Image (cartoon, rainbow, N blue to C red; front, side):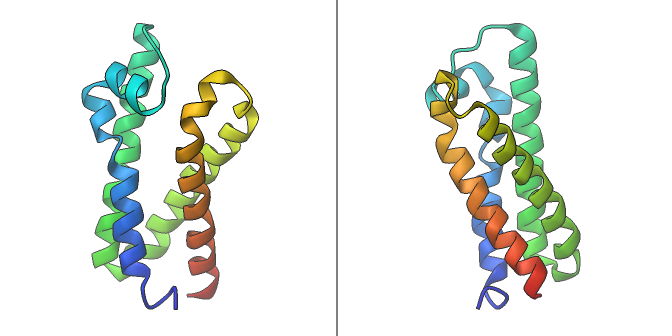
Length: 123
């Protein structure tokens, strides 16, 4: 069933993954409102801006792959690696106060990891 509906999975997870494009435009505001992280350090804001663009790029690639089945294995593998990295990084800091706002991101990424891994194994 997952294989037959995987384009929809890619559209939905790609759109969710692309939402940090807003963080690229306004990193301080997005970090404060979405993740409850107060960051004023210029270098940290630069890295947050870059991460927002990177995540949005992965999301865009996932949506592009929804319409281009021949690209799916490569794009899904790249997204899987990125999302596993996020989940592992979150696991290391999940008890710290700043991580509270990242729980939803970690949960969505963990769900994506399962869906992508199952699809890669079964397709």
